[in-house]
Length: 424
Length: 188
Image (cartoon, rainbow over all chains, first blue to last red):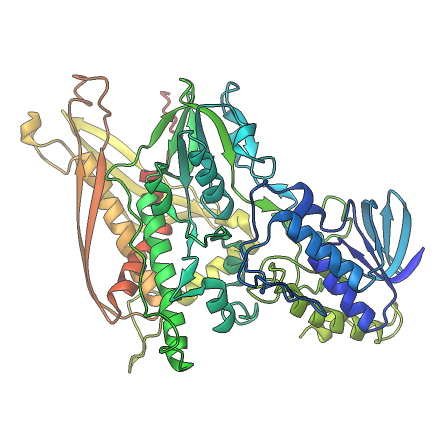
């Protein structure tokens, strides 16, 4: 089977690319290991809602048209939204087609699946960056009496036994899971490393509205000081609760969650926590206030001050005088550990040597320069701060599809010039 | 978001080009980033000992300080010692103080903040029933460390706080004190 372009993955990224490829009249196929929006179906907990408001899901040729633009989609609603997008453009998706290898050959690429082999001049990797939970090495020495789950395996509090829970990680997943489990009545200890604190609403508007309007989300990958650091920043401490309440370490302390430092080790059955809790919270508070300062400055410049609430600052994160450094895991106080420590992509099937020692694809704004004709989409800060948002992948897909068209127009695979010249 | 305008270029005596260049070079050559720090010690008498640092390993080769440095350590008279040098735990505080302060200068340079003065006081609590073996529930080491900086610089109070926070984030001694480290002590 042959197409000019094979897109791997039928989530928002693969579908946005499909829309642009159709616009450019590029024949293509979108290969999907499961169903459309597969990760949203299989790899999220029950109560999760999107962290971005409904209006903020502008995809190429598609968007939200319902009655609740400021609401937050549940997972079934998110799946339906993406499925409808695929139907609206009659995207050429092959579901239940698992890619087992991608290799480079003289004509471009050979994409082997469990449903046959495809040949294509260009391949777009849109399989997402959250394929495999990134569990710290210390997980290996957790006492066997304790049940461990990743945030990908966690569904709801009924799934875990009674008794104390240690949630490791305080970004979007860890804080929400900790909140939900604490509200189920179980004692919760939250191990907190570096995190990004933001209020859900600010001056009467959603924080995402501000970041969108002020251009923070449009910041480009080639305009930031340190793109490696920017690509590794943890997810915002946000939740899409229907009542729009803010989740942060203070709100968690308020319902009885115990805060400890980053999980630094497990020795003799005791969890050891870093003594850096105060500083990681200071870093997060200062960073949040810098963002709010920038928003205030933008609001004044834009003449918005009279139309929105007055500036305000959240209380600094409160830390007890001497947070515990040790927690005995062998005495039954902790029955479950949940790893909310992030994810990494899985490129084990990619037989093109463009993956670095940390398992990330080496690319320039999604153009895999070392392997012409190969593209990456939907990765953190790929081309903009918003690259991993449903709302952000469309702009990246537009630019990368234009690059792909230019590449195809530049001659046969054998005669094409070095791709560096085409990199914007 | 952080903008500082100064007439003359910021100079805190830190060569940031070299530091940033080293970061880029060592990202590509992680083996050269492997360092070994060394110290040697000789007992003199009582609780008095003299430690020396001179050689270390890094950038793929043996390295040497310009001159050996020595540190004399003893215990104070209230411990029935002769107080001929700093208490070892005070050397730990001095190490933390110097590490954080070097970090403040480097971060300020990178962020374009001119420092005029930087000073800090450090205090660590300790229940000495631990080291005396008087109560096995009391740990030997510090029960906490408090560092208080006073910084005069061309920057807002929050930007100065951010300097100190970033310095902790990148400090080796802060990491050594806040996180567990495997220590192996052998006898030849």
